[in-house]
Image (cartoon, rainbow over all chains, first blue to last red):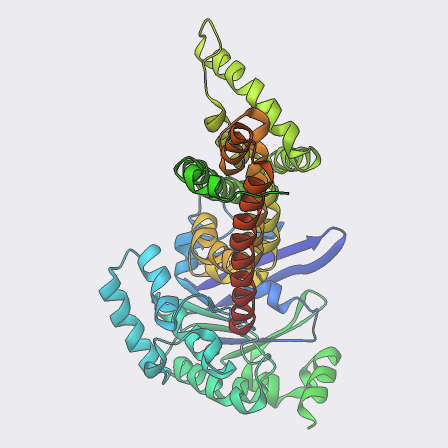
Length: 246
Length: 227
């Protein structure tokens, strides 16, 4: 059974169609990079996986559980799918440690001590153990995004979703975040990553999805995507030539 | 004109009683108004249209009627409503002081609602998304993530509203409740020392409100730094 299965997912804002019959699967341990021009629906697509973006037609299954179905416990499903946002979205009124423990205690029902232990482990892993008592506003963008990744990992997710995790960062901070993500990928974490970082895609992606105007135009292995440009659609070639030429 | 401020000294215990009521009224109305106002704000922002409409109607009604009239209406209506609810033969005696507390909570809720609504809307949508993505329910996200930030951001404006409320409570004199001003008025008339008493009352209001406003200004700077 695939970790994520999407079947003909479609979504409209009024008359405007943002997602059109998107079908794909992500297997356990897969790292799927989703790219495409802005407005192509890639962020919307990834947010259908944990129900942050409702959709009108089609079906999304996460570990066999249907996201859109009436009886689904969305809260439980979301706790198992970690998400990292473009603008970090740490809670500014809470310390780093409280950011990490809040959902562990409130959603998973862990004790405060258990949650702090897990939090420290993961802060250690992203190299920020000494920042536990600070507030998000006191950290750099790259540090905040690493905390956000640690916060998602605290929930012991079965899949991690990244929505343009490096787009809001200063260039010199991009790599510290990508390094953490590469580490996760190499450990076998199932990941769906919306990003324009083609270096990251080349290094760890198992597949690349290219989207345009709400459709999945390409859904191929990394080697096919980067290695055989002549077999790609004209739209994907054009996109690739634009972002890879420098 | 001969002024005799000695009357104030003799009347202090009575004035203190009135002042304590003014404080009690201010604090209760502020706390109650904040709680109900926050609930109203959540209702106004709710996706349930009927709920949002009812809340908006209430808020707009309260904000469009002079406070004096609201006080009057509640003074006459609360006993009648209680009578209707309990089925008593005669309207129960609620008393001016208790009526005033209910009135001010209901009235202030409308104003606190608008402040908290602006506060909630000032929090980026991503905060709710990230709270939901962690598995927190809408209620948990509001209580633990959105409202604390909204409250912190709005604290200077909320306190300014409390200062206005503190001054507005003097309007309870229209239903003869003995607040600070009411107590002073009674002493003033008894001793025919209107100028001295009203000067004293004004001075107390000025000192307290000015001190509070300065505090708000300092807070505002601190909030600006945190952001």
